[in-house]
Amino acid sequence: MKKQNIYFLIAITFIMLIGIYTFIRDEKGISISENRTLQKFEHFTLKSYIRGDYQNKLESAMSDQFMGSETIKLNLKSMLQFFDYNDIPNNVCKNRYVSFSDWHVNYNCDDYLLYKYEDYNETIEKIIKAKIDKYNTVNKNIDVYYYFIPTSKILDFENNKYSIDVIKLLKENLKNERSFSHLNINDYNDYKKYFYKTDHHLNYKGSQKAYEDIIYIFNKNANVIKPKEEIVFNNIIFYGSLARASRILDYKESFKAYKYNFPNIKTLINREVASYGNEKEYLRQEFSKEKFANHYALYYGDDYGEVLIEANSGKRNLLIIGDSYTNSINKLIGTHFNKTYDVDLRHYKEAFNEDFDLKKYIEKNDIDKVLIIMNYDLLLNSVFDIEWEE
Image (cartoon, rainbow, N blue to C red; front, side, top):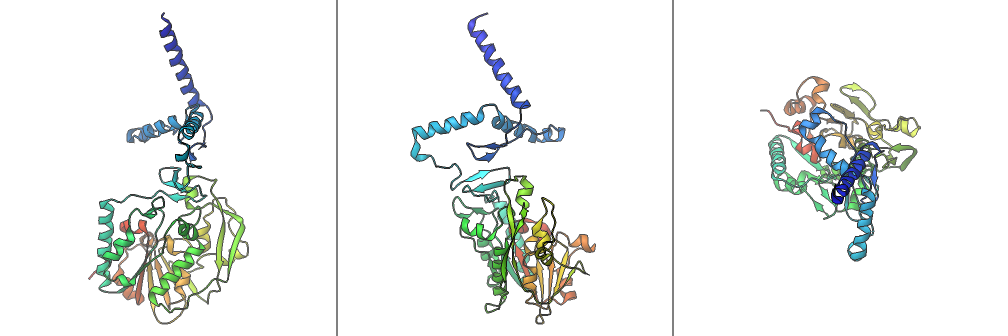
């Protein structure tokens, strides 16, 4: 046998042994050179194979888990720095996104988990405009107000712009633009101020800001409730929704909240008298000790078909339509009205075994004003398509 054939067989055998070892050794979780979570080998299922998911993830896993890949990448980075040092950032994630999964990223080397922002496309714009058309029809029959919360799904921090400028779409297409406001996010520092590190919801500062913005839509001279103090629950390690969904458990935070002196209010959940949220229990250090407890929902109140807040403040009744982003501000807004109804259309039919009819609901509950608290996901969700049935 010729020497070159022997060398070829040795090389092939060596590569095969490395490949086999790659499959049987302990998998690595983090790439130091790229500062990201590595793709691991998926369990084979016929369904994932037919869809093509298994093959795609296998290819990524082989690249990430192949023996010596980390050393090769580190050496390549060193070589690049040697040849073109000035063009290589001191940290690979400085002012950049680092991907952890198909949906989760962080930015600028921070310990904040974000959704990967979505790029603009015409289909999304058509969906949003169709939703706005339905809102404009409702506007003709009832006094409607709108508040939009920008989330990381449409915020491109690398270029400091909206990847999908929903605010512009709303301003240009809503007929009663004067009844519209939004949470002002100018840059990444604004985002960090108003959102949790590990959860997609507004934190206590963001909730207070959104509440004030909303009340000023109704009355620019209104007296808003101010927090009495900031509470840090140091004995609560909070894994928010983004940490729980991505299973990236290195990202965690202490749970924080504002303490308020609420006036006497009565709350009903799905038309039964019940406490909405557990602020008092938390202040007494009575809360769930489960590792992955959803403290946002437990503290402020969970998602229900209908929450009624009776504050007997004035004569007006308000209807809020929104999703879980309203949970942390419902009671604050409710202190300014006689009765405040918060309806989550994702759960309404399940709660009452009937479809939501806006016109009938307003007539039945003597509603004076409607407030729609929106975010990107709500605008794309057909469940929140409201209409006025004549």
